[in-house]
Image (tube, rainbow, N blue to C red; front, side, top):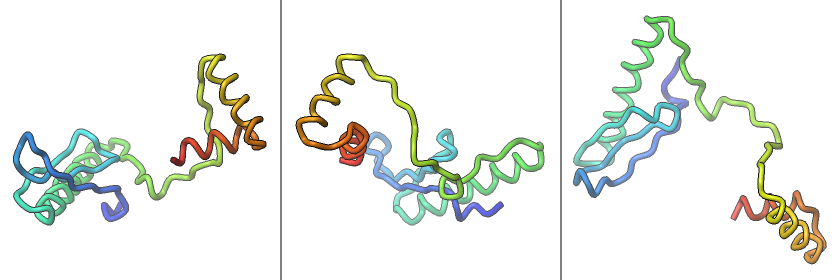
Length: 107
C-alpha cells in the first residue's frame, strides 16, 4: 500500500514552538520539526514505518480517505425542537429540509 494516498496536514504548534506533521487516518502519529517541509517528511517516514509494522503483524491498515467510497447521505440525530425549527426555516425559504441542511453543513 502506498502512503502517498493518505491525508497529511502540517500546522504550527505554539505549545512546541515547531511545525507538526499529522495524518488524518493515523491520529496517534505526529512529527515535530523546525520547518513545514521537514514536518511533512517526518510524518511520512513515521507513517511508512507504522504501516510496514502493521503489515508485518497482519494488522488491518486504515484505508486512505481519498480511496473510500462515500454515499450521498448520512443520518444525524437532532432534538425535535431543532428539527421543527429547521423545517420551518426551510419552508419559509421555499427549499427542502435536505437542501437547507446541506447548505448549512457546507457553510
